[in-house]
Amino acid sequence: MKDGAIVFALSGEMDEEHAAQVRELLGTEGRVRICLDLKEVTLVDRAAVQFLAQVETEGVRILNCPDYVRSWIVAENAVSRPD
Image (tube, rainbow, N blue to C red; front, side, top):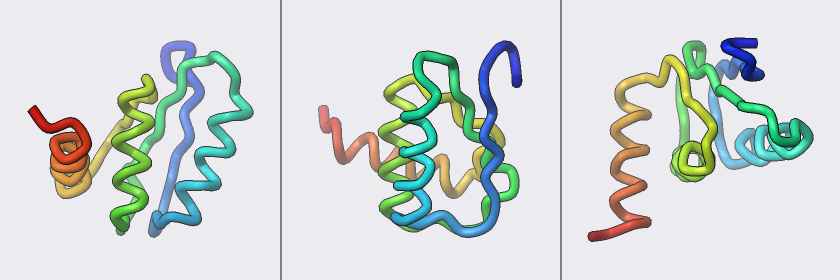
């Protein structure tokens, strides 16, 4: 736990199937603060980026996010919420 939050450390490739599995895990944790640590994530697809963008807006904290993933999340947020 980090500052009273549960930290899920993810690794390897993250795709739509993995995002669905993580979403299921998040649903079992109730109202506790959640962090996703992406330090060991090597590759993500668009579905995973969409998932990460969505859960971040829902209050999940993303730790150690690779720069390329962060830029995709920012771009995804711009597409889903245009000005």
